[in-house]
Length: 140
Image (cartoon, rainbow, N blue to C red):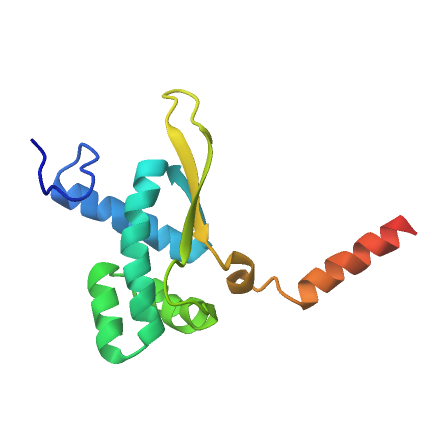
């Protein structure tokens, strides 16, 4: 019986699972969007949302707690200075979009991305206007 057993095991031991989730979250903060299996995306979302909440607080204690969970200074600095200040919501920062079945093992694949992806990426206002202007020129 699996009463009160939280989280997925992924057929790995605890250290391997911890490293897997850290690497997924590090890649997410670096690229703002990653593709992985649905189960891994859902587990990585839990860790990432907790670290993003620490990033929104922005104090030294939160930074140290975030570094204990994701031990990469460059990524945590990017989170605290670039990503977290642009997020205007209190929770639900990430979404899991189911995309396809992976050829080979037919595993469910998903994209894990920020809900405010365009805002964080910087593709707001000016860039969208430039794209519209280019499209209008092509039509003429």
